[in-house]
Length: 587
Image (cartoon, rainbow, N blue to C red; front, side, top):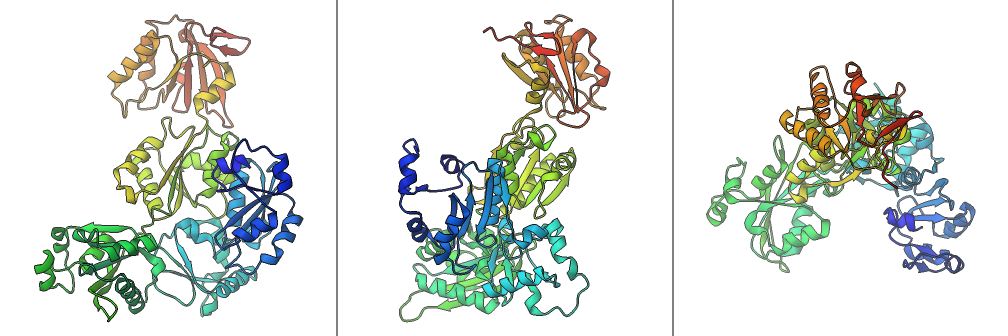
């Protein structure tokens, strides 16, 4: 239970009186009540219960509370050793399936779900959009009917006019929509939309709409909200598709706009009169120009916020006050090409370990399980392919595209998508974490998605484990690649490390285009180390053709080294005996 809370899976711990008398929570606060009372107290649509106990007992306790898919919370049941984790209630819309899956990855247990979508490897159309940062709309009965049609293998039609198309590359999406190819005259009951438009059908709404607002000082909040709803209705646009608000910078403290932001958690973009005046708009105003220095606020601000290739969907309309209100407000709405929902997005920097998925940490597995999209160098993704789920997309990248890879991952997360950016080994050791974090920090705070680095097992650790205990005393790591670091600086580091008698790990020791640096590094080492200094040669660690050997500086096979090789150079006390390389610590 303490681990559940420490890992962020639960906000509160509750115990029955009998359990509380037997369990020591080391001073942690918890609720002590009958389980039935706990369920009744917290039972609401967005709640989630993780119950450690017997399924039968849980079923009897929650049975009187169950109503429908729209109202029921997520209920996950697990045994006391977290070996079996069952999605019991609210599998799709309440997120129980996803929660149980993540718990299984984090605790190393077995995820149990008997739902049709999971067993048939179809995406759950009524819940998959959450991981993509979209908002669901539509009658619960229509969504239920849609899922029944999928179970009956009836053709389903999807109309998408906004949001990322990457979801269609998922194996689960292909399975779900396979019978819909070349189908004509599909009835509306078989239709799902992904759009900013209001729709009577089942619909997911990516956050693509930017609402431009102009108003008189101290305009009533009621007028602003009424104007927004009226504008959305006239334009047939969904409030769930709003990305944020935009206005002139002098309105940064306008009470009604501040209240609107607070109610819906809308981002607010502010623009100067000079910037707004550069935008061509269909309805400029000389009166507005004389008042604030730009002929347009609402239209220009919405167009600016929507960015390049944005489209003005609703030209400005002025809404005036009634008897109980004061002021007036102007609304315009533009649509961006890409959604903007950074508060819903997540960017996980995942260290996949040196090769086989068995070297993945549970923390990395949890991050991968949460993510809708995996991005990485293709050979690294290939190694993880056995654990990628049917409802996850992958984007393959190439070796020299590191910056583009980071930008793409960050852009997707800013759209509201949960993304894993994958490095081999540890992403913070010659991996992608540093560059991704630099780019993340360059963005305004309000534009940043959640950012987490998940440690992995580095090749230096696996090489050491394979050959004995060479890292028992002080050591350092040096990359011999001069693509990003001047060779003169690398030489200084090699010389300083050898003088200081560190055990040295050489990363990126040799490639086809860099074929002399390792020999030069050995020449520097020999100025301070004897020829019999042991060196571990480790190639393709954690993979099928792994090779680990120990040589000396004087007999080292430099010609066999490539970019898949890691070298561990011993210090003056390191020795090799009976197949083991050891660096004594002096115990």
